[in-house]
Length: 135
Image (cartoon, rainbow, N blue to C red; front, side, top):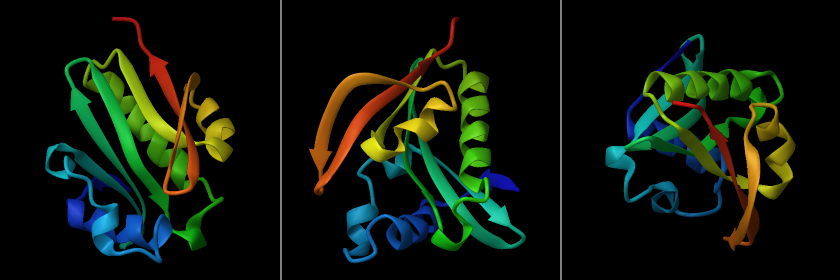
């Protein structure tokens, strides 16, 4: 089941998966209060999270994380498919993310394309990927 969750629930999974050796504050975003946070549940257990930030006709998804024991089982794919549907439901023209370079093939399966803009943060390489819908 996928449903909206509180930002604090997203923080826990972000911390566990993305930056477990850093302080919890390092996974919080300044704009988390403005985001819509979604979680995928396996029974009662929250196993995957993603945050969607909307601005006019554009959206960005951030902090997409699936708990390690549940990775490779399709949970992240289900959650990202849900976000694509939400983007269309909200009438977005463009959806984008900052993807880790090694994950680009995963995002390409959802019709996200690399923009060519890349950067480094926290010792990791990222590329901006995007998808457009016609209005």
